[in-house]
Length: 89
Image (cartoon, rainbow, N blue to C red; front, side, top):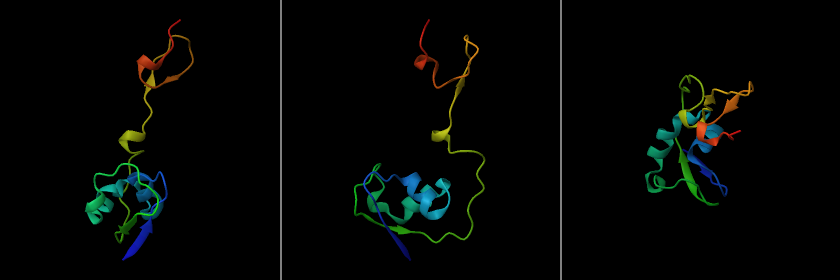
């Protein structure tokens, strides 16, 4: 079984993508490391067990939390993010 030693600032989806090949394998990574399931951002030096991955799931675009929302614009330029982020005027 392979192991991974975390670096300061690592997150589940980043580790899954870099070590397993897809951020869509986060659930499997967390299942192999239940003692750390409540961790969002890791400190350095945490040992995680990496599950063996035979096939990488087919992804249909980026993970939902990575998507950028396009907001209609009155200026003619594309605007990205929630409408409340846009400057008025």
